[in-house]
Image (cartoon, rainbow, N blue to C red):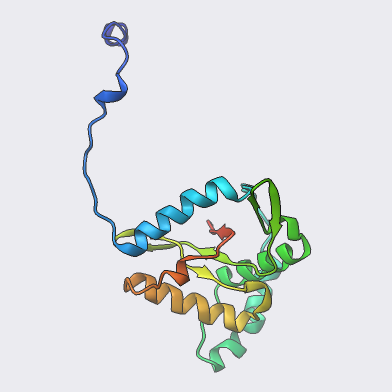
Length: 170
């Protein structure tokens, strides 16, 4: 009866939406939002969610930890994922492209967006030229970008150029 009574009240109108809160954005957040909106129009989007057997990657990480510890660098599973995806995009260059003025623009460099949660919300700095970097440099870049993101010290350049974004869930 409650549902029927509610249905009798009619549908909510678009103008009925109530703004809960208006949030001013800092310059880097505005740029991030503009880039995300632009990329939604220009970048061919492929969404992939799948389970993978990561056991070989886990073994490889365990084997490499000693070398990374000598350099005082933390090697994460995210670093392995970034490197793997960058290599895959090198082998499938059409997947590393944007759509501009009716043409597919294939990029030579792979920029990988790294989602970072921080107090002000999610921000996505970019590891540039990930396809041309070794695991050591990818790990260094990841650590630097996360530190800068959490300290709200990212430059606009560090937010640009990502054509692929990745996240891990365990």
